[in-house]
Length: 165
Image (cartoon, rainbow, N blue to C red):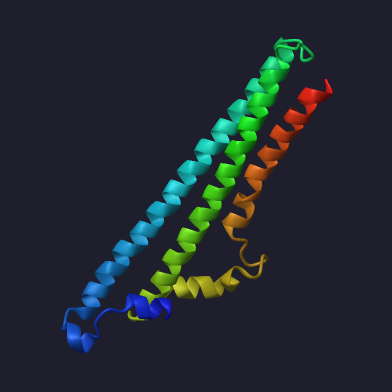
């Protein structure tokens, strides 16, 4: 069964004369919901970026203000680094989850558009090469998934460094 089969409920003949009007209203609502998912995604990214930046700044501050080789500081570095790596993995999984939700939502949007006279999102996606040509469009998720791993690497460096000193 396809997404279109799941989206289409009643035919115009079985629904009545307001069929297209109601489809358009549902379409507008659904596009708005997809936009809200994107807003939540951005808020989550801002939260994790701020949290990881604060952790890195805290480690840097402690490293400068304390003797880094002090036995009391080493467990702190290890614990903070492990916490940071866990946060980065959770962040990455959240980014992937939001990507999957958006992918599903836009499949539904495209299916609803087939019932309407215009298909703006389908047209835009085609104009952007459906995300296959990075010269036309590089989906944000491709970039977005690297950021948690960059911070993961920083936290890993701190973790390994806490044992080397």
